[in-house]
Image (cartoon, rainbow, N blue to C red):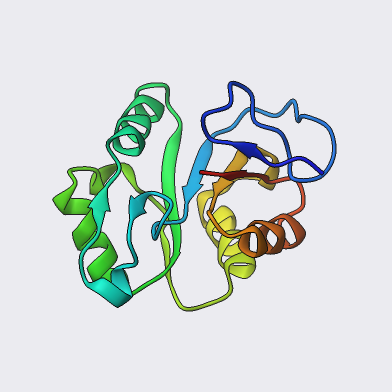
Length: 142
């Protein structure tokens, strides 16, 4: 099994060979992945400039960004707005449900297959859960 890091040139699947399907959506975990800190605990988070720039670069290439995060949706969207990237995040799944089911639902709403998705999360258990629930999705560590 191989888990690539977001900084790697070519991401690999959590299990199996490198996929050939085009990535059309990047699904970000927020706490300690897209930003530093835990919103529900601290109420404040610190932007990660390279992630904000990545979202903008992805959008310029026609790749959409989304969020799958265990947070209060209103607070998380407000934090994304304060960072100037809220409009780049579509089909968000922010709440307290398991991430595997949330990503499956998100992809269904977006009309995309798991093979077209890249999921970025700092927790190995969340990456494994998503990889199991949405077979074919690529998972990365930030």
